[in-house]
Image (cartoon, rainbow, N blue to C red; front, side, top):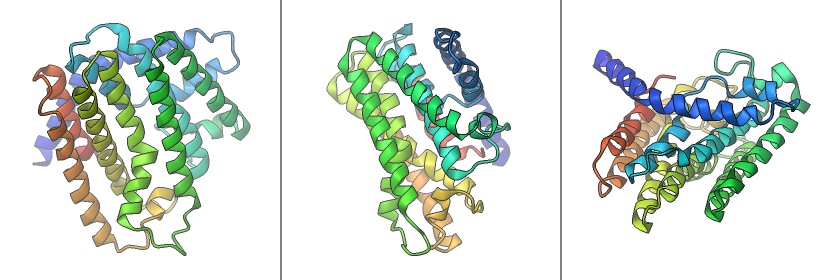
Length: 285
C-alpha cells in the first residue's frame, strides 16, 4: 500500500510539472520587471522552490471550464506571490530555522528586510491585479489577504497554556490562514474562464475544502514540533485524540472537495483537480 501511494504521488507530481513550469516561467518574467530594484535578488531567493500547488490549482480551475490560454498566468503569479509573502511573515513569527532546505528569508536578509520585502510583494500583486481591468480579481486577492491576516492574528494571540482551543475554533483559524488562499486560487481560475455562478461557487468550495485538508495534513506532519505555533494550539489535547480526529477530518474534507467537482465538465483538468485532493492528504512533506 505504501508503495502504491508513493507511485501515485510521483505520478501526480509528474502530471503537474508542465503547469508548474508555466508558473515558474511567468513568475520569472514578472520578477524581471523589477531587475532595477534592490528587492529583485531577495525575492528571487524567496520564490525558489515550492510545489506551486495554489497557482497550479488556479490554472486547472480555469482549464476545467475551457480556458487553456495564458490569461490565467498573471493571477497564478499573484497567488504565488501572496503565498510567498505569507511565508516570509510566518517564518518570522514561528522563528523558523530552515525553509525549503535553505535559510528562511529573515535569517538570510534580516527582519527589517523581511517586512519591507513583504510590503513590496503586496505592491507587485496590486500591479498584476490592475492589469486585468476586472475589479473582481483585485477583490478576491484582497479578501484572501484579509482572511489570512485574521487567521494568523487569531493563532498568534491564543495561549494554549491558558485557553483550550475547540475543534471548531481550530478549523476556523486554518480556514482563514490557509484555506482562504486555496479558495481564492480556484475561484480566480473560474472567474477568468468566465464560469457561471454555480461553477465559480463549486470551484471556490473545492479550493476551501482542499485548503483545510492541506493544513490538517501539515499540522499532522508537524505534530511533534513544539516550535510550531499552529500545532501548539492543539497541545492541550491528547496525541491520540488529535491524530485520529485530524486524520479523519483531512480525509473528509478531501472527499468533500471531490464532490464539489461532480457537476463540472469531465476533462483532464477536473480529473487532475480530483487527484490534488488525494495529494493534499497523502503527501509526507
